Image (cartoon, rainbow, N blue to C red; front, side, top):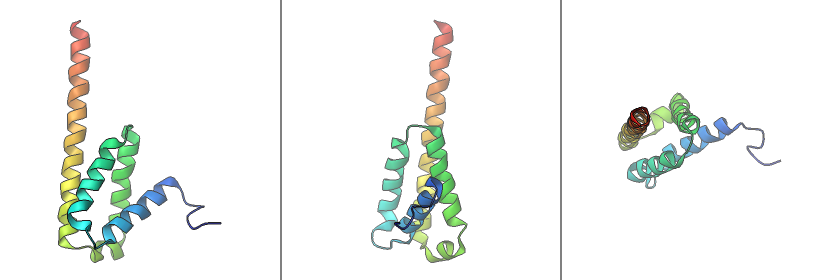
Length: 104
């Protein structure tokens, strides 16, 4: 049996995010870029929300919360702003396409 065999997919996501947050080598600026790229590749809204939830769960761990630097916090805020912007854009596209369908 390998480590993590009995973990759910959500628990694996939380652990991966915690590892990324604690990786002090290159985590600052590259963290946001990597997370945004991964987030935008996720096709279903459920998967994207699961990623946001995993990030929330990761930050609820006090050891993680106090161990990350200010730069990582800034990077996380930047990621969350970009995720919000991405979701807003998707909603606007859906709204425009449904409006266009009604007109035709």
